[in-house]
Length: 253
Image (cartoon, rainbow, N blue to C red; front, side, top):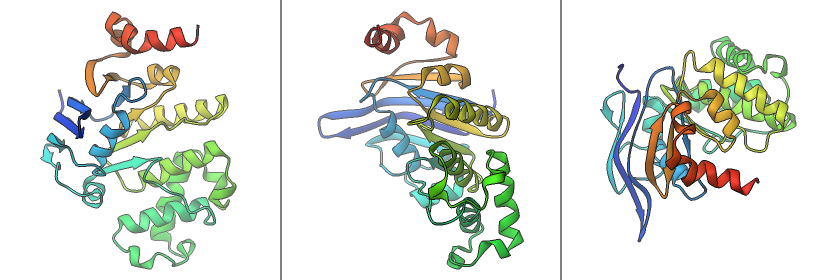
């Protein structure tokens, strides 16, 4: 097995008497989509916040490519190769799609002090930004203000902004939230393409998307991992079906 890009070892986060993550150990490998599922309140977003550096764990370790980053800041983790999309990423609605991505490219290159420079005049920044827009399917929308893009297109743009950081691990928190069926399909196709070059940790409530995209799935219930396995293994688990999937099925019966 290759070395994990990202892993947690016995990660615990307590808020007083509440244990939000309870000895969570998981790994993310290169070119993998690893999905985290579980009922509301299972600790999924708290887990991502710890991985991104927004919350400090009570105990346990976080490693990125073997390096202990448990005490690293959000900025340090971004420089080391962790990007979190849809929560810490905010688009500038009055800036074009190209300018939004170009600003992220600019910051990655270490010259963010030139924030207000017209990025369209700088090919060293502009060219990689256009490439990323093409990658996420927005090449023809480069000059449209972000605030005028459709909801699904804004989600695609946020992925491009996150990819501008050249992450080793991309953390996605409900990328298909609020999308219509066709928008969700476009996002699924995008994530499937990105998997060839990008390790992704995915939180998503759309189970059709999870089981279509994920290589492995970890199921969290009350902050504790009850199972990690392939989509087939998870779908056939009696424990998972009774703890989570069965609960969702009965709610929709």
